Length: 272
Image 1 (cartoon, rainbow, N blue to C red):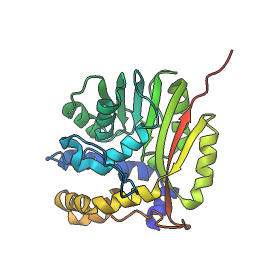
Image 2: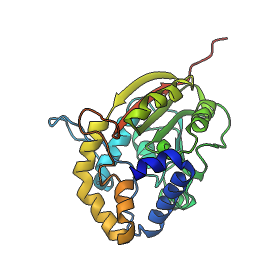
Image 3: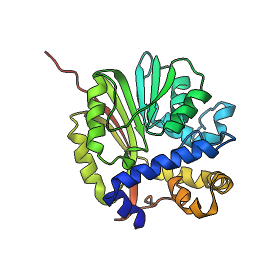
């Protein structure tokens, strides 16, 4: 209940705590074990063929699978892309290597995270810069794709972020978007998204996939938190990393639980 009260009533503090968490990880993750910051995605079909990953991506399997599921909804060849709130850069790096975009820029509020990404990654066409999601500094009609994954719940004024997405997308461009909300916030969230004027091409409830990934990856995440985080802060990081489950619905959703949704939007082409 405290977490929910914080999310609703103190959005600036919520954003500041998130930024501090990212900067803390950037400072103390000396072994480079934390490149992805999302909850992950697991296929629910026991007969599904596992996603083929490079050896260096294997320990981040579930987090990479979430990016793959989101990115796989469009064709990336020849596109210029932007990820807002790119964190430690694992997702941007994965998409740039596997989906053949022309360029990919990651932006994040955390200076430490951006500096880490620019030191660590060396992939042609991939770069990182510091920016606030609610005050993006790119020109109009700059990108074919904007992706935002599991980050907007921390933004104090999400409508500002959405307005920038619409502004910087080229006509015909796609907004790939995945995040979670409490059950009783879903209707307002959908209204906010509808008010952008973007065309909804796809909406998918992936809550069960995320819950499954959290369960499969719980031991690894807990080991990392216990290794790097002082005991007094671990409960907070258990919540931040989804180790505690973070209130996601396990069955029929109830008030006080969260749903994790994935959307594909497209900016309409204006006919003259």
